Length: 395
Image (cartoon, rainbow, N blue to C red; front, side, top):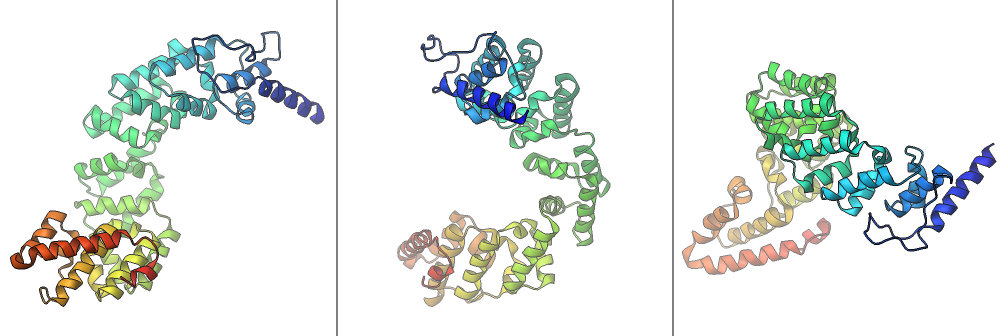
């Protein structure tokens, strides 16, 4: 029996592969003689595989795999499905991706199920480009009921975010929102934040920027909220909501690893916790970035790690665009006696480019042209540094 199955599979794959050529999505020109489809009296699996290869762009292997989930004897229905996608701006690669990930879509009832779902999203303001990207990346959305799931889920998001536009932004940022049961995932977590006194405006900001934050298990979500509360953060401040966001994207082992890295860079556990309370996203930096930035700030500039811990936002600045060029420039100013050893880290690394030039270049009117040229040299030098800290030590 097993050998018979293998024989049939090989025969189907061989027949489909023989007729393979670069795919043509419903081209107006008739197919060349070498492109044949199996008739209705042929093996329907063979026809399906051949169609998936020739009209949908799937590889023979992917086509055979997809044929386990969809089967048709004539091209009428799948042709009409592909035509709908093309008419709504889907590119050929996007159609191929969508069919590969959800082949059953080719059996959709175009007028009663597929078109109403596409038209619903477009009626709410989703652009053709965003819709094609969203559905080709996550075609599972099309399996959800329009009346029982998609419309209620979108309406709930709109009511929470106050407009169709912001709801669209949330679902295009994280399309999986439209596949979840929001009543049992997102909304219990939102209610947890409300119960802890987090303002609605802060909840909306997090939902707008990182909607997947609220899709954790309510049990785990509440544990993370309680952990943030125990650290002493104020629920009415935005840092509380941001800290919850960070913890919901981080496992305990990852959290412990971050502490280990910062401790190796000279910070105490209390300093790390205090820094997290001030600027939660500083804990999300990769180990490599932390080591490189701390190496420059401590070993090159001579700053105390405890001083950096008091301004955790500094460590989140770009190494090549902020920390290295401004740090090297500050050392030059120090050597010229124009600044004191006690650098104002906020002014040095966090200020906008305009404010930085005003404070550290233009204020020295007599030397301004020379200083501006020097700063540009340091900036160009920092851009050429991409490797490890060994190169940095020679700057």
